[in-house]
Image 1 (cartoon, protein in one colour):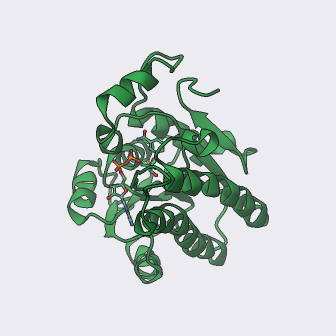
Image 2: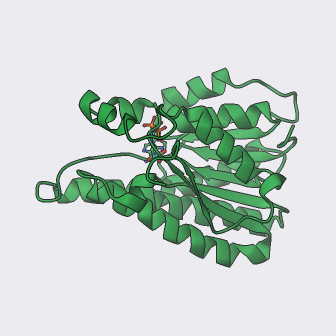
Amino acid sequence: MQLSKLAAVVTGGGSGIGRAICQRFAREGACVAVVDIDADRTRQTLDELSTKGPDCKHHAFTTDVSSAESVAKLVKEIPEKFSVTPTILVNCAGITKDSFLVKMDERSFDDVIRVNLKGVFLVTQAISKLMIDNKIKHGSIINMSSISGKTGNIGQCNYTASKAGIEGMTRTMAKELAEHDIRCNAVLPGWIESPMTQAVPEKVLTKHLGMIPAGRLGQPEDIADACLFLASRKSSYITGTSIEVTGGLFM
Ligand SMILES: NC(=O)c1ccc[n+]([C@@H]2O[C@H](COP(=O)([O-])OP(=O)(O)OC[C@H]3O[C@@H](n4cnc5c(N)ncnc54)[C@H](O)[C@@H]3O)[C@@H](O)[C@H]2O)c1
């Protein structure tokens, strides 16, 4: 098992990609902190995780990643629940509020930037302080960006700005945290089947499916596998980079 006896924090763990990451990490022996704003979905993910014995219990936390107060509460509670300091963080919480540039209201822009971009800042700042204070070894932070942050996407000026911002912030985090033995990378998923993409009109999905060299939409497990690689020692010389998991879309 690649993550045996390690603790991992996964935001957005209540659904889709985040839930698949929690499951993959748990199967690899990690103790998982499932973090999400939705208490019911967080609990559901927790219930589905395999238990690994008394030293490795998983725990659920209801947290709004965009609120400094809520994140402070999370970081206070984590050491109370886990016997080891987390060495892995995956920032996966995210939202969309799509609209054409000329029609988008200010609230939709602000909300997406607040959750997707500021949320990564707040959680990473708090968890990396915990890692540094406890002198952890071999830390790994993984930020969920998107291929649309690189290419742009019609109707998503707020979302693509947040996801491009995550890539830039990831490179800064990688530079600042390297001296503390913490690596920081971004993952850029393409089209992944999840509750988020269920909201996308069928004709848009069909059009994009035709552009994917792999000939299929991605599954949350495809992203979880990439996160496992970045979380594990198998990627110990990789930091400050972005990995595209897109089936070849927009290569
Ligand atoms: N599905 C895709 O095709 C795709 C593609 C590229 C990037 N992504 C990114 O992957 C991540 C996961 O996407 P998904 O498809 O699993 O979406 P999803 O909607 O299934 O899951 C997102 C989760 O984030 C949680 N969340 C939302 N706001 C939050 C907040 N303020 N605090 C804490 N949790 C919050 C939601 O409750 C939900 O459980 C997102 O960051 C998304 O932008 C997804």
